[in-house]
Length: 188
Image 1 (spheres, one colour):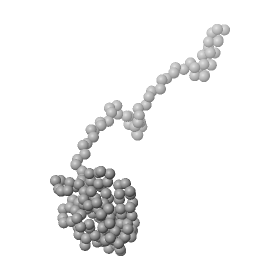
Image 2: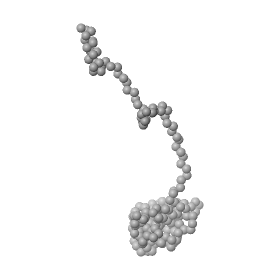
Image 3: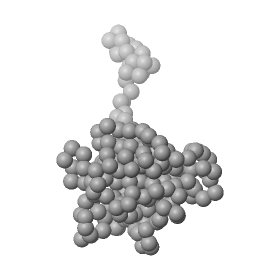
Image 4: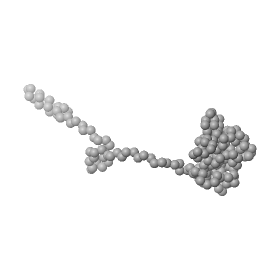
């Protein structure tokens, strides 16, 4: 009877899976190869050391290689003692031009209020930025609103905007004037 009980236990146990040997799961490598026909490589892929970036220059910047733009070429007034710094490609056929001066921000703003015959708008109090819009913005043909923007770089004791010309005087500018003329052929 004992023998029959053991046989019954084995038969019943095998039917439930108790008597089967337990196979350990083998962990699969991650990530799995894309092609199941190809076995995964046992050697790890070679990792290249990061490349040192070479010297880069801003693609849109252009040094003032030629003569400074004039009021006639810009179609907008330039503060009399302002020094041309650089021009940049704004996209969509527009450029913007930076001028620096060590005159006070308020003096520059008053000058543009007088010559442009408009009040403009103080868009930031700290640091002070004043904008004068001088044309209609057309999204399909313009990247920037045509106008003049004046920013105080001497605000709160700042040393000013660094002159990009090495060894040039002045070394820094207290006020920067950005002029964005309307693209050629745009109505005013």
